[in-house]
Length: 524
Image (cartoon, rainbow, N blue to C red; front, top):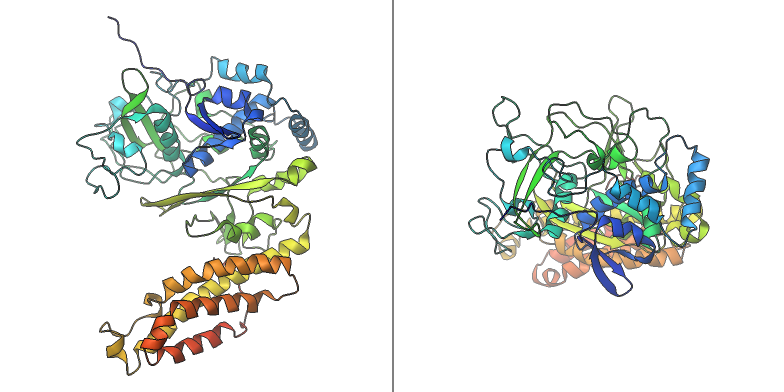
């Protein structure tokens, strides 16, 4: 019986979870665009996969609609997008099918020559497979202990191909540095190289429309009409990737959104293509990454003069509620400000008013360290916030920025003063009663974490109250919230320890003391 090659088309086989009203289903990329106007939203439960897929889909949306044409003027580009958004029929089916039927594009996940977002030579260049558990985030692999998962490398469990593709995207965008399977290129000995993925440890902000058609058109980054190089996504490039080749310039919109991966992968399918049984995971290039600004990230600036001026994205923090990001989303770009909102927000004022006023924001973060350790991913959806933007309501935008800055400032002060109060308590005559650990540094106070945990719900309530009552000063309101949190966290110890009450009273007085300088917006 002849051998049948395993196949799985990311264009036509189902692997993307979506929601239509109260119904959920899986579909491929082609149907995602054909039915985009009927789909409410993506329903993928993994936040970094959603963020990665939205970048890929934004490029495909630009290809299908012609919004990737650098010959368009800015006015023509905005006018064309407004026309597309006014259509209730979604994307043009003829253009969608033409793109996915283009023989120059490869959407086959297990193609022997050009597998989608993979490198077929890894099977011969790597010393051994990496193990299927290395592919799936959350599974322990190698010698790591299985704390929260029953999986281990002695009994590898195949992964459904739909799930494997979702984790493939995470590695391309959020993958760890180092620790890759050795890869030998040419006559050089196998090497362990690898840098972090371009989005590692970051939080992304994506405009969210009333349906997927609006969402994808709002995702397309602003026009760049100055590029001279041909713009190709990896699945559009007829030349297989070569780790020795110089990096391709980051052209708009394809390369900037889909061509910055630092990882190379190859999925090994089961006999019918429904599952992936093994994976090769290694480094993709020796060259340092090209400088780029992702349009969905908040960028911070450190330094004031060009030689020392450095730009870096805002770090993801799983303990940070979405309202604490509002100042970075609503304030217009300002060269004197230490952070800049995502570039994708610069195009939102050109959207039709019915969409612009209802536009929400999807927050997708992956809390990681910059190198190898993963903590938690998270996601949130804001209400319609664009009417508060500085371009439309400068007073409200400045009020939001002031409240967020004061909330963050008092969180820092609360942590420090809780530590100082504990130190003042245990340094007194009752040290033996407090415990045998000796004097504690403020940062190691057992009161700091409970105080922060009690503070943030109060700070959120205070934040929304202040937006409804603009005449109330922000600083004393958040100081009061911090005081209540500190008293809650220390309630038992203020009775048990003789000097605790006096130390807490001193900390409370310090919380309400006006600062000598205004809190800086970039201290977060």
